[in-house]
Image (cartoon, rainbow, N blue to C red; front, side, top):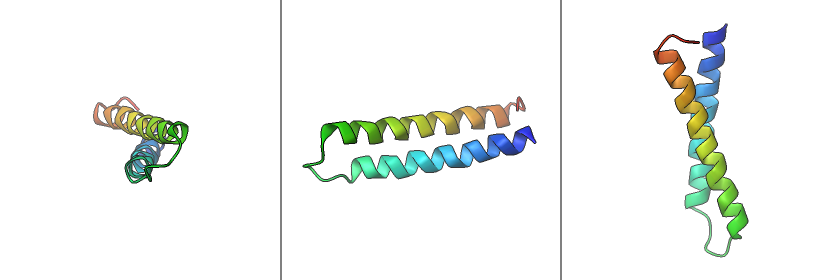
Amino acid sequence: MIMKICATVFTIGWGAALAFGWIALAAPADEPAGLQTLNMLLAAAGAGAGMWSWLRIRHGGC
């Protein structure tokens, strides 16, 4: 059960990192800085969640 949760967090985390990272990189030049920062923070949070769950899966600590 816990391994499934870690696998789900892994998939959703890296999906969020890719989606919000792309949104941040492909944003038009006139986009507000606050929105750009929010997209980068969400991408970083997704990458962090994906990396954390991957490490838990790899070490069998889930």
